[in-house]
Image (cartoon, rainbow, N blue to C red):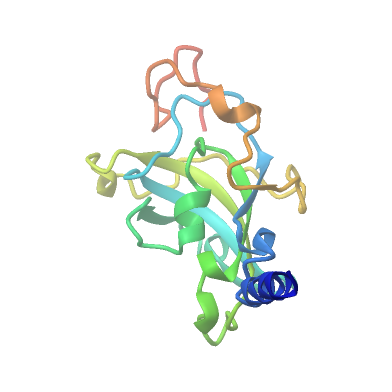
Length: 194
């Protein structure tokens, strides 16, 4: 009996030493800072997205911002073009939505980091604004201008509620129906001139 208990304790110690005991640090955490009133369609794998973002280390040190460059960043979701935390964390977003992502190193730049700005094993915090997106078949190269409205920083909470990936909120079934209007040109309710 003592051997069995001792064996179980040793297995538990090995399991914990490999980081299996604290899985909360290894999960993507997300929170919605701003949700649009209407969502015609949500981001899915294969979509080409255009996002503005601010990236910070866990201690609050900024390391990158598309806002400072003045141009949204674009990539195809789910194709490994960005860190895994982004491929996972942007799924289900609506145009105009702003999310906060807390990305563990395992879904970010890993043990090697991305020197000099991102140290090894760094947890990353992002504020991501979905400017627009479309199917990968769409011709996004013709539309280089930023069509979104200026949302400012005073409408968001800096540390909004954050949930772990897999937790669902009431946004799950909003806007699943209707015609797509990804560019916002014409809308049945009528848009104001920008």
